[in-house]
Length: 128
Image (cartoon, rainbow, N blue to C red; front, side, top):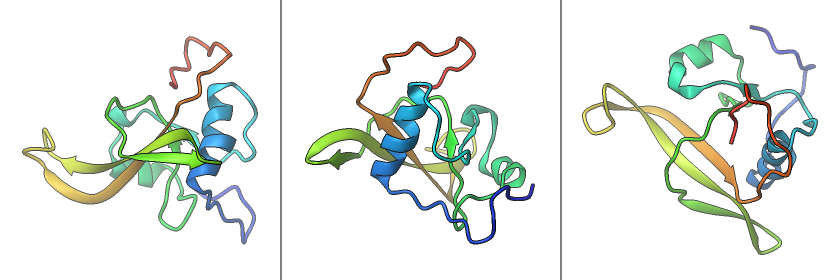
């Protein structure tokens, strides 16, 4: 799959920009500043399939909206000294479980927001 962006385009958002300009807008059904983040359910795809089917947006980086993985967060994201969201680092393991599986080099950062949506989402769109 070829990139739909012009030469020289770089997508290098900060944690704060991901939350304010992408995650909150997605949650509230507002237009996104750039159409670079795909909607994918991670429970249906492994990293090998995702990297084969979708082009990287950054330097060997992919960005996706996916239903939330219910785990605790390990880092608060702050803006003007207020917590606006959380970032959790997840490591992909091959095998049945992370306890018995083989740890890979694939790392995923999950961003969540503490702001609640004022708009109801479509029944088919289960992003939370």
